[in-house]
Image 1 (cartoon, rainbow, N blue to C red):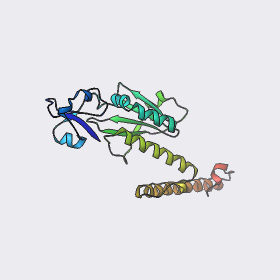
Image 2: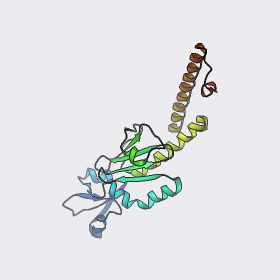
Image 3: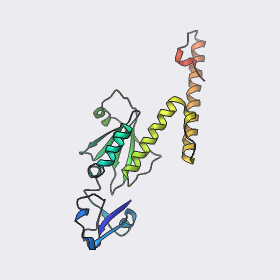
Length: 207
């Protein structure tokens, strides 16, 4: 991700494209480099455009496009500078951990009947297979792919794509999870039969 900075700035601050302070940099002093290069040179992120609130404003066009295409819901909580994303099968939050590094968290137990406000105050866990990113857009794309895969798994994990190494890894994880679930259903069925009970219909199918 590229950022803009002024080579004559005493404050040593860099800005994202679209930041109102970025527009004030004189053309003669402007330099556009990668975020990592700026940090290496001793620059720090702008206090405005390094926030989720600013991202929500600057990238409004992108978020609107995601809403229209995927039917998701975004909620910005300014007090905690956190962006929440609700899909058909999950609820997520993107948190700014400082210096334009954004971390992804997933709601522990998603219940589509709950309101967004209720889920915001529920318990989340860190999505450990996703490293903190300098781009919230990258995390949003991950969420869309993740929850689309969850829908496929709910139907039949064997329909998951296996084109890349990561996709093959997730396929194997889904395959092992499916085997464990089938094993539990078999054990429940055998336990029910041993007690002379009529097994529930949802335990019978183990194919």
